[in-house]
Amino acid sequence: KVWLDRGSGKLCLAISANKGLSITGVDDRRYWNHILTEESRFSTVAYLQHTWWFEVEGEVDFPFPAGTYSLFFRVHLGRAHKRFGRRVCNTEHVHGWDKKPVQFQLWTSDGQYVASQCFLKGTGNWTFYHAGDFTVVDGNSSTKVKFSMTQIDCTHTKGRKKLYIMSVSSMYRT
Image (cartoon, rainbow, N blue to C red; front, side, top):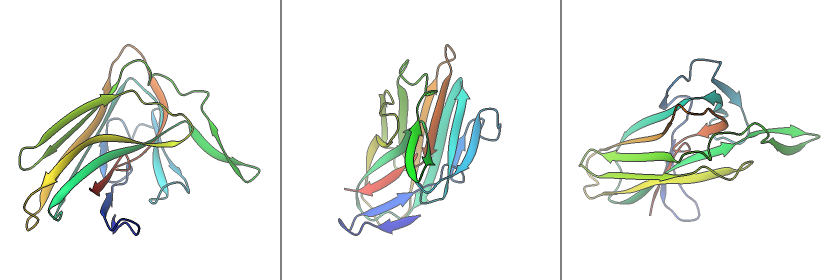
């Protein structure tokens, strides 16, 4: 989905974790579920039960206007639900995200590359994780952006995460 932010007038683009991303093992219901939620503009999110190998990749080819853009993954650790009409979050089984950092990478069709890493924190709330920035010089042609979020470490499992990309991602023109 593409829109202009009302407050800033900046271009925003969001990609659904369920339809626009390649998620390793997403079709294996032992590891992943697709759950309905009111917390996503796409009405469903990818929910990780547990995994040893976490890998999400995406790609967008879009005629971005000239400018600098930031790419974010939007992540929620824990599972939110409503109890007596109030939002509550079960974070009891969130595990493995404090052992090793998650790796973020971003590539553009004109050769830009950014890599970063961080530990996922903030259980119970949606958090934006900055994957990197890229600059579009020629706004008259499409720019292809590839991006990934990985945590590949088979010494421990990771679990209880909701992924709502680019909300795992959003791109904003800065």
